[in-house]
Length: 89
Image (cartoon, rainbow, N blue to C red; front, side, top):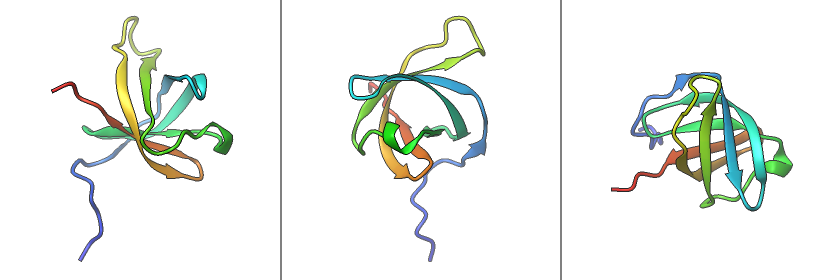
């Protein structure tokens, strides 16, 4: 039986995202993959915020006024973090 908990299929996708949080400042990072539920971003180990941290994120370079989204750190790996889109339902 698979231990896979993901609800959404991940798609390899590389773009730049600006993420902002008081603990890490403002960073321009690269994505590794994306799904309907979130995105994985590549970070240096010293830049990785702890699980549960909510950051603001905005795609860069694809459109002039991309929306700013709230995203929660849900998974930490040596090369980056998995971010879940936070929805205001």
